[in-house]
Structure formats: C-alpha cells, structure tokens
Image (tube, rainbow, N blue to C red; front, side, top):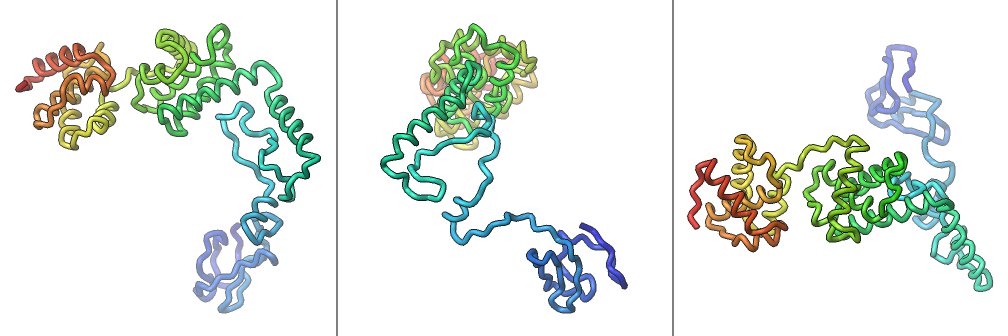
Length: 316
C-alpha cells in the first residue's frame, strides 16, 4: 500500500519499509492489532490501515495449530477428485482430538467406508482413481519424482477427457502416460524399464503410447542418447573422465548424424564402452549390456560404426 505523508516525507511502500521515512531509524513497529506501522524513535505513524493477512485465531502449540487450522492440503492432480473432497481419517479421534468412544467406533467405521465409496461415485471416477493408484505404484517402483508423476497424471486426464481409454486396459494406458511424461520431462527411463514394472506387455504399452501421443498431439522428439550417459555411468561406477569422454564421443556422433535411426540406449552404451576402453576403465560388453538393457550385438554394431566414422582407435 502506498500513501503520501505530509511534510518532506516521500511516497513509500509500507510492505517493503525497513526504515523511517522521517528520521531514517530502522526501529519500525508493525502493530497488526491496531493496524498501524509506527516509528519507535520519532513516533511517526507511517500507516494506520495495515491489513493483517494471518488467521483470526491464535495457537500456542503445534497440536492446537493443527486442530484450529481450517485450510486443507493444496489441490493435487494425483488424486482423482484433486483432493477437494472431505476425508475421514484413521486416527480414531474426533475434531477436538479426543478418542472416539468404543460404542461409536463401528459407526465411524461405516461412515468412513461410505465416504470412500461416495468419493468415486461413477465409473469415470473409479477408473481415474484406479489409474492414478497404478501411476503412483509404477512411479514408486521405478523411482520417479513428483514432477513426472504429476505430468503423467495430466496426460491420463487428457486421455480420459478425449475418450482415448475406452477399450484399453488401465495398466496399459497408465504405463503409456508415465512413459510419455518421462519423455516430456527428459527423465532417462526406457520403455523396457516401465513395462517390466507394469502389468501390461511391452507391445501393448508401446501401441497405446503411440496412439495417445498422436491423438493428443504431444509432438515428442526422439530421446537423445546424452540423457542416458550420466545415469548409466553412475550405475557402472565409472569415473567422471569416462563420463565426459562418452559425452564428447556422443556429441561428435550427433554432429556427424550417426545417431539417426539408432536406438538411443544402444548408442549411449557404445559411447560408454569406447570411453571405458580409452581410459583403461574397461567394462565388458556383457556388463554394459545388462546395465543398459540392450544386447551385446547391438553394442558391438554401434561401437564399430562410431569407431570407424569418428576415427577412434579402440585397442581390445
């Protein structure tokens, strides 16, 4: 709030005020009870209409603060109703924090059961609740952070709105949405990793992902092999110089257009293999293949192409 004060005092911003505009004192007192901002040194009332943005109640400990607060959790796309409905907790206590009497516990149990049922009252809500639970399970098993989970939930919601899930399994669409979210957030997770954690087959997830991507016009670019380098090098316990060399080899391959039409994980595995040999931190092709999730034949074919076109001498 800005206001003009008579005299030689200039217009000030009360919210950012740190010193008195009259005597330059830093002893500024904000009295929210009286709605005033005053200077303790000269007594100037800088503002007399300050609005208290805090709650109208007081709490003297954390338990009292939790009991009196009326604001709930923020909206979340990870819950089918976005967390806006009420929820009867499992704590066994009433609103005042007292234990529920034994004679009333059966009644509270029935209320809680019917509350959970009414939160998903129709088939669309039940489908969405089941899908979001499956998304959370997959993301937890693979180790994905909240940003990817929320992006996957948004993709699934868009698929439901456009009627793209009809005739498809919840597990397949959820896994496809999670893979699309990983691609959009540039998180290095392969389709094989997601399908191994999912109850759907790789063929079904891949087909569903292509269908959703086309219908929702996601326009996702092919995954860059560079996003896999850091992750695979750490899993193989390779030092930083091997990682840097692998990234350098990969950048040269991209500039020479050697990665076009090649699987990103196979190219990344070949670059890591060449870098490990160059720095005498040799890892066998089988070890790298098991870590990356490709075959040894793929690694041999890719590293031969890189070594030949980039004039890299690999001493086996």
